[in-house]
Length: 143
Image (cartoon, rainbow, N blue to C red; front, side, top):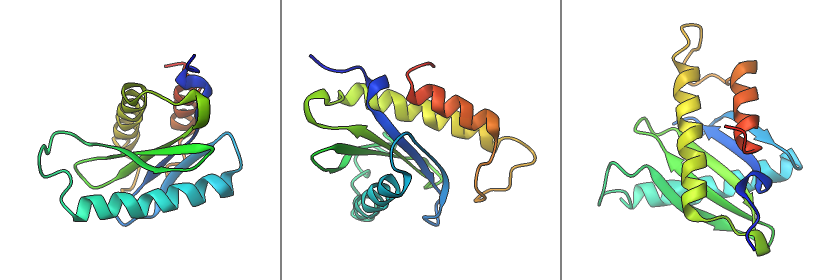
């Protein structure tokens, strides 16, 4: 039986177009999760450079980027080249692609709302407590 996605999202990250982290939220060891996201970033950049999205520019979802025994890392890229990552538990509770796609679309929506704030400067870390609370609720499966 599959575990629900809410029990699997252990880290989400927003990485700017210059490949600097803008926001990271983790429920497990943050340093380990950041290393996993960094590894997935290389894969995402390779896919984008190779034109993997050329077939359908409307599809922002990059799919599974990197996998270990314990975690799977999925990616999503915005039209402005901001990358969104979700680290989910691997193993027996493998997330369905549609669930992860939905999680990343919702994260994209939250990101868009956060950067529309007139006090936010593009490329700077997102420090909004409201954004953080909404992202953590999303990770917990509470939309």
